[in-house]
Length: 239
Image (cartoon, rainbow, N blue to C red; front, top):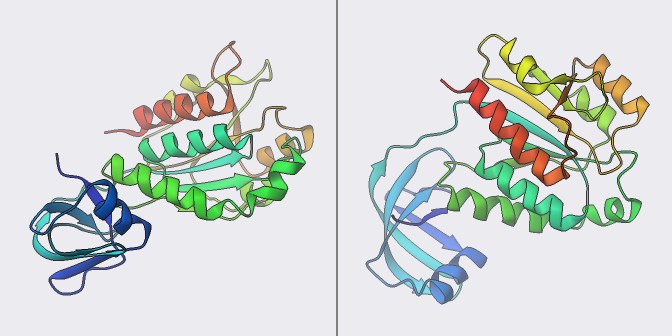
């Protein structure tokens, strides 16, 4: 199976990859003239043949268009900042599971040191999203929003299905909530930090239409909850 890479744009019948991606192609994959790769500009996918390779630039001739399969669902992940190794694993898997937008949350119980450093991680996080998108053969990379306060994020998304994972005993099973929904194509999923949501955050989410949902009696790590919940939502929203 051919590897897929993202380009800024298609220009007539040519495309160029520069920077880290070009370095990966030329030095790690040992790309050579004449090799074929799939290229996406975020809207379309085309077959590209390498014409010229240098350390930080790879030039392609575009040969033909390849059928693109963008996700049919529009899922936004509102994810509280947790320890960066777990957070980065979570956004990588969320990308593979097809989310369209990722919003890091400055939750009340997120570690303050992590929140202070989060603003400097955007470049690294976008690189993780791009690499995961290429690996999973997505047409486009998810949008990474700036760090947001939960109350602000809860009111910013008008998805018809709004779910907030909760450990509270009266939270309904996620399965029940999804089964009760008519067919939808949009959803927003909010996942709290290791210490859980505060009462104020629950109240703010409820006011914005979010419903509490449980993944069961077992306590999951944040990154595990991301993968489990997104898999359930994808199943419920699928054709």
